Image (cartoon, rainbow over the protein chains, first blue to last red):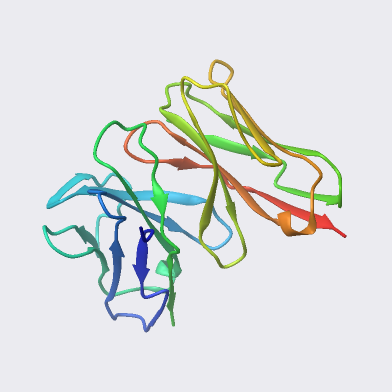
Length: 115
Length: 110
């Protein structure tokens, strides 16, 4: 059973470009979470999605950021018109459907560098 | 608002020493608490998960305790090794998300 997969592992963008980060949850997991780790800081929650639904986006910046988790395919975190401050490691986690006590399993992360 | 604090921020010990990392959180209403290890430039490795109804979990040389009422958790590492050098993160789950501390950067010197 493969773990949570994220791609690309490293992504370089110039200011103003778009960044698309993908996350494939573990088999049997229908809940996906995105976190951001800025340099020298802890991980911060961004958004929680279930299939075709955004459940909690309280940690998502109001502009330029969006997330989706379609019925088929991976979850996508999209950052439009990237700026240098978006440079960070973006981690995806997944969990089984069920209570909030279910463990979240983390992917290896995508490291975004904005030039 | 749930805040997670880890003390110390950095720790350097000689090989073979037993050590304790501390984590505190401000709101005892959590579903679980988890300790992770993160190597530089890498992802998170889950070490131990303690559900809110549990008091401790053990795995090999690691033992984690949870005292919800006081908002504290400790990670005990026995007989430390240079390979244990990493940043250790504590996270609690109050709701949909997990709240992370800033981590303790551990260096074990040979």
